[in-house]
Length: 323
Ligand code: UDP
Image (tube, rainbow, N blue to C red; front, side, top):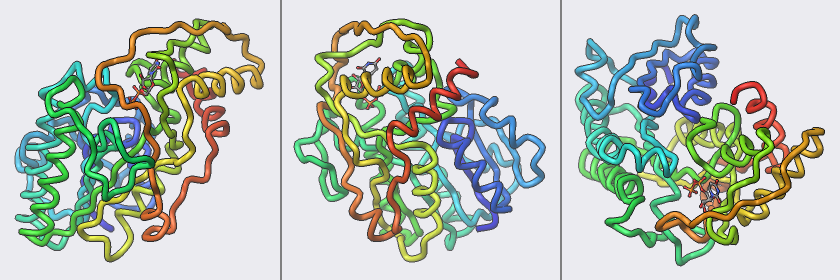
């Protein structure tokens, strides 16, 4: 892969992906409008000759922000607000970047390099509040089309539709990854996600906030594992038209999540507040979520390597210095 366009480059996942791609020697152009991304996530790349950052909104056509026509070997489309509080704060930007933004990028690839490859980062949220457990790629989901989360999950579903049209009708090499909950260094401390909230609260000796009864489940993938999965999807031959779940199948209730984070803090010698504060469950909060990663195992020979406790330890170390 020589020339790569990476949207959402200043985000949590985008910046880690950029680090790995730049290391391979690829020419990487990273785009981000910094709505929820943070330029500090790119400080380690600023002097790299094979990396360029462009601040732009990828809901517009790339003809606008690239300044010249470029033939990309690979386009990775990650740009989007991604945490529930953030996408609900920016609902229009969220549905535009995942729908029209995806369309613009695919049309650009079609016009400039129809042999190029496209990876769309979709989400476990396309499964909504799932009636099937664990979730495999052939499950169509249980999504509220007009609720607080729809600006994100329905937009990702439309993004997938747009990818499917370009794969079938225009014969582009399009791949979709459905990303499950991911955490690690550079997770925005203020984006309101469960791991960032709990780690931040633990470090501040505040009680951890449990929404609802804490019996809902999530499955957390450490960022390095996720990045190696996305790279495998982008680099493996013969995956045109495939949709692949990426996540860690180890499933925890929110109460278990809280106690593991507290345990790791105590192992690190941190004094923490042992209280929990119960708050209302947000609307349409999925009750269970666990990826079936059989397909990723078979097609990519990929599976997560880092346990939740190991990952929390690394995340805690980063949050100590950065939040
Ligand atoms: N949650 C919680 N306390 C928090 C933040 C989140 O109990 O401080 C719960 C939230 O209700 C959800 C789960 O943790 O059930 C994961 O929430 P997150 O916002 O990380 O992402 P989601 O998986 O819902 O997209």
